[in-house]
Structures are given as structure tokens and as C-alpha cells.
Length: 217
Ligand code: E4P
Image (cartoon, rainbow, N blue to C red):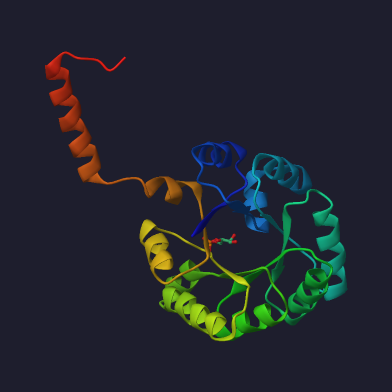
């Protein structure tokens, strides 16, 4: 499963990238607003830092304007992936940009039928939001499973990008049901390494090692 970082924080993206845990980055208008940075400038910096796809979202709501914005965003760098909302206009823009060879990420997906439409329109990625479904007591993970089955039934190449990941359990569950990619905030990715028995075991090993009076270097 590929790991994307859902953030516009260069420092945190860089830190995870140096460890080898970043296959791409996703942003959205809320993340950009939170960063306080100029949109195109911050996307350009992330694109330099990370080799994989960097999703930058259009803000127009009408297809022709989305296409124009998408082409403009794509000028920033070769690894920009144009993020489009799952509306009829977004799907129209997705078809057009995909035909022009521009990678697309169709976002705000909350149903298997929406995911089916995105695949038919040639989306490179579909972003089902599992956390936001869980928030309203629906089953976010079931959505990932349903999309996996539908895409496999018909051999769609659109990658399932599990989004709105809020916990380490979400990550494990998405991996178990075969999401192609997951995007999560930096803290969730860092938390994946944590286990109390690892900490306890390491402390005991180091204590015993000290008793030997040896050093490796
Ligand atoms: C993904 O592309 C979205 O930016 C993100 O995962 C949304 O997460 P949230 O529901 O926690 O805001």
C-alpha cells in the first residue's frame, strides 16, 4: 500500500520523506488555508521535495473553469495531480483532463456508485473519505471494500486512495481490504511505529547491554 501524507507542512512531509515513508502528498483547500501559505508556492515546494504525485485541488465548481484551473495547477510541476470534487462537473473535468494525459484525483467520494463513475471517467485516483463516514455512524471501511470489489470485477485501473484516515486502526483496516493508497496526517503515520511492548523490550535490552560494559563502535 502506498503512503501519501495529507498535509502542506513541508517540515513534516520532509521528515517522513527522509525515512522513506512518502509515496505522494494530498492537500485540500482547508489544508492550504491552515498552512497560511500561498497555494501555488507551497504546492511547488512540496513537488520539489517529493517525487510522487502531489494532489492540488481546483476550487471552481463549473467543468470548464475546473479544466482551466487544473491545467494551470499542472504547470506548477510534472508531479501535480489535479484533485476534483465528485460532482457531475468534476467528472466532466476528470474525463477531459484524463484524456489530455493529466493525472486526476476525484475527491469527496462517499458511495460505491460515485467511485464507479470516477473510474469510468478515467480518474487516476478515487478518494473515499472513511473518517467522515464514521463520524456520522456509517461504515467507512465498508465503502473501501465495496469499491475494491467493484473495481476488481471490471478491471478498473483507478487506484483506491483511502482518505480521511484518522487513526492507526484505519490504516491497518485499509491495508487488510486492499486499498491501493492511504493518505493520512503526519501524526497518524508516525504513530504506526508505536507499540508499548517495543518500548519495554528495548529498555530491557539496553539495560542488559549496559551490564556487559561493551560498545559496538
Ligand atoms: C484527502 O485527500 C483529504 O484531504 C483528507 O483525507 C480529508 O480528511 P478529513 O476528513 O480528516 O478532513
